[in-house]
Length: 449
Image (tube, rainbow, N blue to C red; front, side, top):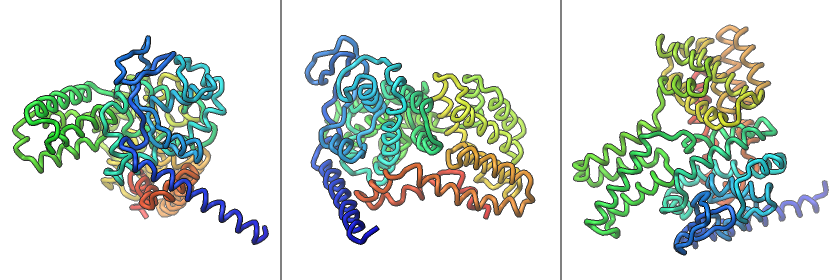
């Protein structure tokens, strides 16, 4: 390739990223970041909340992307303001009704009939969705992060329903091995698995805010913090709400006398915690007999390397059935993905305790979990699992080092080119890969070397 052509390509690359950075930074001049007004979406029209008018049937309530956010998505394939409601509805509109931003009924079959084309966009959305969450975590005071805490951005009950729609489509339409890792990360802390405890937390925190704002006014700084906690729980519920409550009570210890704060906190902890009993229950509810049996064995015999190996293998087979065999009913796909993600978290927690560290059972269990998380494709997993079972402990450890090297490549391919785009607009996003690895079984595997 000539130096002239290389120079032109280099100029084009930097100009493209300069335009992206400029368009991205424009979000900082908008109070609601990437979001427009809050709408009620019906099958034939959408109306603003403030208008007082209602569609004939409310499909969901949410804030769509504003014009600036659409410039990013249409001009750069860079997606911000990601919600399950609006993202799924946009996919259905574009690929089912040839109108991404119009109003239309929920005819899911229209999206599935054009799944090959729709999946390309869904994958791009999902990549940026995961990256946007990391951005919000790293920059909690950014306009994008603040926008997600605003009341009415999206109702949690609608997000729960549309999360299932999105994951059912995504999982049944995947076309390559790397798409699963993105879904595996996206489902974490998603509203796919709800609970009565979460509903109680929403109800109680709303009552707390109403009581305190009625007494002290909504402009009081402490009341504003309660308001943010309320919106975090109601809109985009995440473990961050627990930290927000802890910090509030540390700064304002007199609030500890109101036991309702503790009630909300306990409900949230119960919602986000995950025990072997929960694995058994969820596996039973989904008629996953092998996984339920393996979880029962852990319950009765404890978290030994052998019992954890059996659980990890049952989980790996569930991932194979979900992704490669396509043998799970569509209506069980979202819950199965959430169960895999949650059980991986449980196994990571138990394996990180180091019991049986270095044993072949321990190493094979790590290999299974890394596969279930999405960092190994099926061919690689089968090769390494077989090789570890036939090797001595020393050789098994060296194979684990190979696995870690492969997982880094998998993460790179799964998020390109989206990750480079995010790094170009915010250098702190370069820590994304390290953060993902430290939260996975790869971190426990590295301690074995």
